[in-house]
Amino acid sequence: MNISVYRPGELTAADRAAWSALQSRAFEDGSPQLANPFLAPEFAMAVGRCRHGVRVAVVREEGEPVAFFPYQRSPLGVGRAIGLGVSDAQGLVHRPGFQWDARELLLACGLSVWEFDHLVEGQKPFEAGASGSYGSPVIDVEQGFDSYLAALRKQSPKFTRTTLAKERKLGRDLGEVRYVHDERDPAVLRTLIGWKSAQYRRTGRSDRFARPWISHLVEQLFHTRGASFGGLLSVLYAGEQPVAAHFGLRSGPVLACWFPAYDPAFAKYSPGLVLHLRMAEGAAATGVAYLDLGRGDKAYKNSLKTRELSVSEGWVTRHHPVALGHRARRAPVRALRNTVLARPELFEQADRLLKRMGRFREGS
View (cartoon, rainbow, N blue to C red):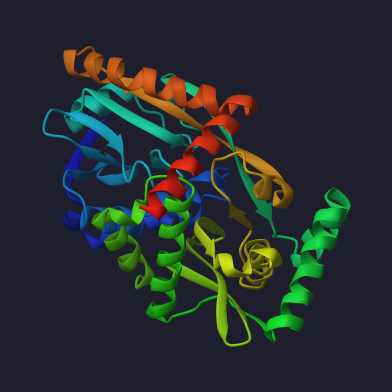
């Protein structure tokens, strides 16, 4: 393989266009998972402006780019999927039928190991290193919102009926319910970030927005708008006030759901669920094929989904002491986390403990 490695900002306009073209043809080429916005050049460039060690390997055949591999590299050669921890789709974007040797690619990138937690399907050279696969629920709206809503009524009649009833009650109690699919007011983004930070703290989770690079990344992507990629802030209003909002990424026919939150003062109306139904309607109207809700077994995702994609976690390694040390350190942590998530009785206990810690932290 002819492999060259660049910082994201060093990619030529021609290379970025070739990368985007591979994504735009992904559906017709039979690899829709490669159209995900987390695999777009714009996402790689944005992360590169926020984090050190971001690189893109470009594989060429007869001088033409045929594959793009974004990653992050530590000084010791430990590689991670780009944006690991906040990216919901990872892998190598390539032309149909392209095959690669994972260890040869790692060697060219100066990596002893490459760790991933949302590897998309169809990445066979990397899948050999997967330690587990997990469902990533999606909402299909390619046939239109009415078709989706009809399927939802059949699949989850009580959930659908209750959610629509709460939307009507929200309008009666607070004023006209209004949905904005593409809100451009930065103040509303700041409101969403405030809600999400409070939710993380309230539930005992680590506040992602306490990390400056994540806040910077989201702000950048909010202002990124192009023909093939853009940040999308969707907001549910009741009267004149926002009650729920979501920030995600749109790339062609895929809307990747990312940061949803709502004002807890209006929790009894389930504004987050109402928002997701409106998002599905708005996405269908703008030509989106599906909304990717992201990996995770959560009640609201299970109620809204039409099917699931599969993503994997694990690592690809070369024979190197750094790779062995990294895996030895990370494997027990992952195994413990996945055991808790897979067993409801353990998850419920852990969730209750985290929430108690969150209440203590808020009180102090």
